[in-house]
Image (cartoon, rainbow, N blue to C red; front, side, top):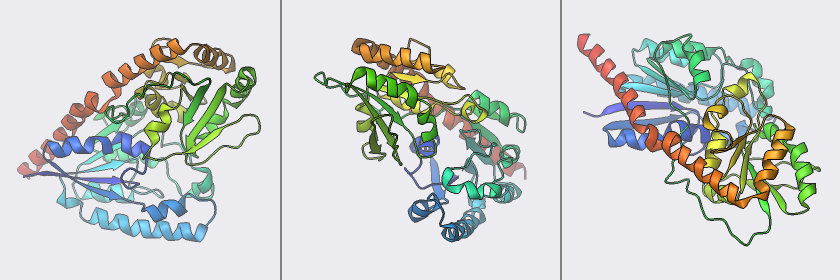
Length: 370
């Protein structure tokens, strides 16, 4: 008899990078080991196009109400499953109504989160809805869960205040999909790149003063690329704005020579899982990252990447890499090896399966006693 898991997630398949790299990657491995997976996403493609735009409040209210009843239908059938997997939260607003219902029905919850979501960080497009968020519910969800999976030690330490059964699985990369590609030897420029989303463009902006000076110093031989769902327009630097697309994301990443991940040193950033840096490293691009949170665990400075804490260190490190193609290749190769050995699907899939097996076996044993 197949073991059945219901995945309660915000977005449809292949829509959200975080969701894809936290849980979607592992679904084929679960299926290959006898699991039946049903996917219960909250937002549709139409919802996405409208919910994350500025204003349109009545339309957003309609989406919230529609999504609420959609989630009600999902939760009504959880007794059909051996466990329910929740990524981040069951509903984007309010308290733990849905999580409580699942708990009362006696179905084990596997809760996965990869950001400091107990803090009230809201996208610029939805700042007006901030008062409807209840970030403190993260601790409650941890307490309701049979198992909590955290993306790094900082997040795990938070979860352990509410639950003793907390495991760390880093954000993982599909190394068969993210493959390095040989650079064109004849190009007479170097391209620094950043990938992210409209909500994290503010982090890229931290680096603009450094990039402005470097572009002036290299006089047309330094290109800057931003890959995101929104572009950046700043008169201080020339930027190639490339719309993010799942169809060509790896190809666009491979056109970068140096990847950057600037972050402020604050509580939210300390909860980040280093996703941008992991992406650069996976395709053999040398990554330069702020020494914040898990970045200091991913990067061994000067060996598989670089850490830069201030403008002077950013400028020095980027200049060093711009001037030395051999160094870029060596650091990029070491970064790729780090991903394969520690942050790939293959490096983490057996632990993921083992954790699910423990939850399901515990549920089966409990059912037998009842």
